Length: 335
View 1 (tube, one colour):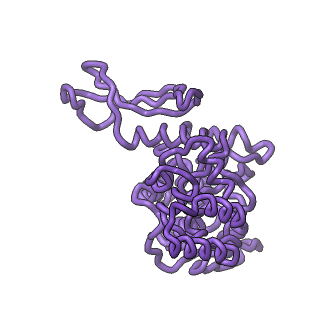
View 2 (cartoon, rainbow, N blue to C red; view 1 turned 120 degrees about the horizontal axis):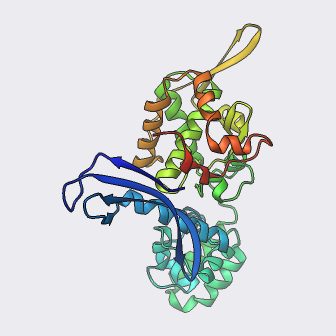
View 3 (spheres, helix red, strand yellow; view 1 turned 135 degrees about the vertical axis):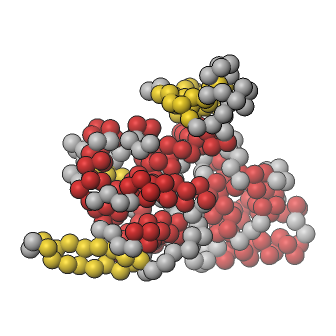
């Protein structure tokens, strides 16, 4: 749905008033069409359009996310993890897979692989035997000592401890990258920081309110940038949107303390957390969380639950307790 609002910036063309337009448009990428959300500015005096980097990031992230999911192409963080699991550098990966010299590094930095290259990268994930075959095919590209070192690293990958694999299943279950988790990365360290950061900001908070602050932070970040922060899915239940496995997540983050108390013969709990110094959270993600905390942090549990019940995403999906797709972020009632 198209919306327009005046914003507090001057037109670069005339110095006059500017409107921000939010809309949904069809964009072409590699001869295919995708529906994506767009935001752009319009000079009221001239009618000329212009955009910010943040606005461009929104629709490109959403577009590339849809393309990757449609064609089974891994995301940049997944591409990086595959390389790290084999203990190799960019150049070695590119030579083994038959890519251009800087190609693998570009894929890790966000360039979308062709469908064929994406399938090759996905095929070698957790598949050392295939990786060894591909290394043998590229044997002449390496000096003998480097070849032997690479071969040894690939063999070691079979016993190398994978990054937080158990925690990924514990926190995320078997969810797949899609619009249902905002195309977000399954990054356990980032998720822990996000939860801890919100708790620390409020000093003490109950799970119900924390669930809503997580929801608004993730969905508002998607509205701005086309990507969630936590990579979590949210279910619409009686008391508003909640992350899947939220109790398991909160109970398994180091540094969080749960205080249980009895009120009116009902057992309740609050969470507190030792100070968090963000290392995984990006600057724009911290900015998003801070904005949500500023707007909603002082609300009571009843007030924030009531606010979430007015969200179109909750209204649409609460009857059957369904997962709320992040496309509902664009109707979010958060100015």
